[in-house]
Image 1: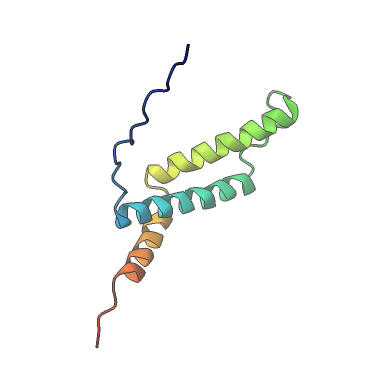
Image 2 (image 1 turned 180 degrees about the horizontal axis):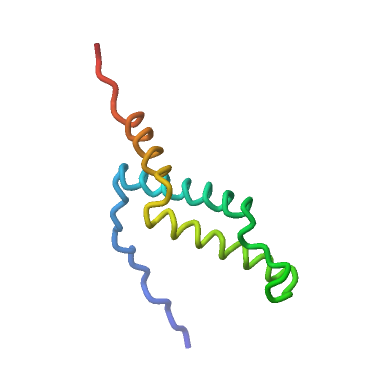
Length: 98
């Protein structure tokens, strides 16, 4: 008995995010990355005395710090994303011909 596979249908088209939306997302991700590094440098995520879970706990602690940094950025952050976005949008505008 031969069963033919179901016909493949094209997935519905998902609209691509607008350029400003994509730039805003990139700026927010950049701010989150900076905040992650700042939090790690400040000692967030150090697990030496918490649960003594070893290397696995250290790895999950860094994920927690990253999630905290993303949440901080999404909640307004330190204003870095807005500054970066303004700069990106200023560079993204088409130049006027003289």
